[in-house]
Image (cartoon, rainbow, N blue to C red; front, top):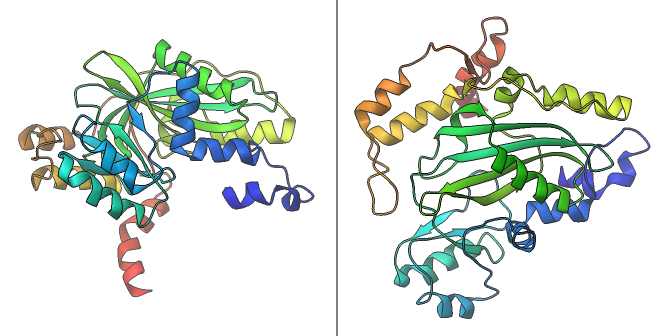
Length: 307
């Protein structure tokens, strides 16, 4: 996506690109810039620090309230995230992250107990919202924070309002997913990040009635589309292979049993995992009508070892 954006002029003679201008895309890709834009627009965020060197970290280590999260400014999923629970660990952990990522940000840790929401949107070339969708995360992997392995379609007016305000402030164009986590201490949703691309939970939106790939195709070929602002709620979609399986294995191995992250009940996790058939439950790519993706996913680890 970044390569296409940077070389937009080379692509445009041959194809149409429904993608925001590169400087705006860079802001959305950079968690530091995203948080600062959100703060300017009165969008709740975790307490965030923007160190520029190791000396800044040494000054911060006695000032911040622990635990904190070190976040790369540019990353996908949970790559590069490090949780720090004591002052003496902040500088060495930051040095480790900085070896792969340029001056990551430091944020307060939002404790468990609040829901995580994703707001997905499609904007036209005039920066007008043409389709949106909201999902609530039920399970995730890694269990310490990562992509959802089970999620549900919902409506949430506050998430919709805050997400739209953020994307409008950027004069957005194209696709984006905005993620919020509700802070159980004050019940406010706090901005986590913008994903300026297709998102992993896309199959849920399609199953709920918002077919973003098709809507994007129509917008590119027809110029614009009528707004799609309604969808079915209560629909669930599951990333069984292999996200939800890894979630189960992590809980069974006790990976959540530490001072920062909550404990998961092994019994309850196993019971919920075994609920393969429920009303309005879909799977990300498992389908009897089209089994080839499932078969490929099952055998892909073996194929990778053989290649």
